[in-house]
Length: 318
Image (tube, rainbow, N blue to C red; front, side):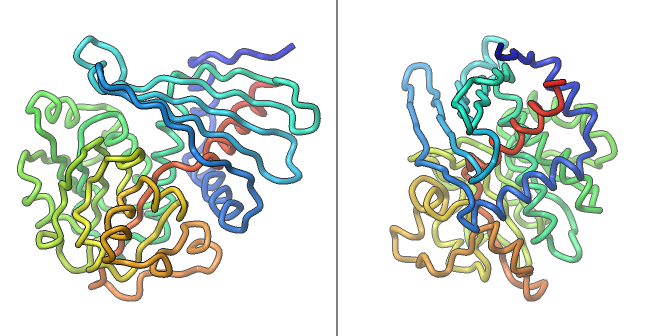
């Protein structure tokens, strides 16, 4: 009989893992993906207008593995106004040998949030500048918090500037016990963040650029997380023309609906200037110097869902 794993049990399983273990399984997944050892069809996307939201359907498997995974994850961005999380969803784990449904992970979008933040930590592990002055976080939601939480194990810097539009949300962010140990300052002026931070993570569903090319300092690394569906954009397209190193979690996805879509379609950069994250990891490619700008575009790849769903299933099946 298929198991049904509750959110509480999922969180308990995650808490038993060291951050380094979680980061490593996501890193291994990216390497497998870029080596084409993974079957990942195009993302299914269902947009909603009123209220605004979207549903992602991601699925796939690692070749010669025991499982395949289907993930449904939604974001309804007005939910916090009525006291609900903007994220929801579930993951399904099947046998790759028989097609039998093995487990239903009722994660309510939590595993998607976690694996997305872990991808940010993987990027930091390989692309963070040698000396980080301040970390800049663009956004105040759950992903903005989780990105910073998981950076703690791969970045020594503890000085942070967080940008948001709401004073209440900025204050809540600053007080979040999950972020204890960071010296967090807040701003509603994104130019101030760009001026003082040389490691920046963007986490919003914005449909127009927030970070402008003229405001980014030499030596800055940017990880863009928010543009995960068509129409979203957090980075000005011309910013990619200033970058010496451009990383995509998935070239095909980022060129279709990531921040990378915009500079590619405007002719600012070409596909051969983009390196996949898994390739960067396996080849050991690094930033060449502390004055170059690097950008990582993360649209979320099914291999992340496969890796984290397998981990939870294996930890709970006995």
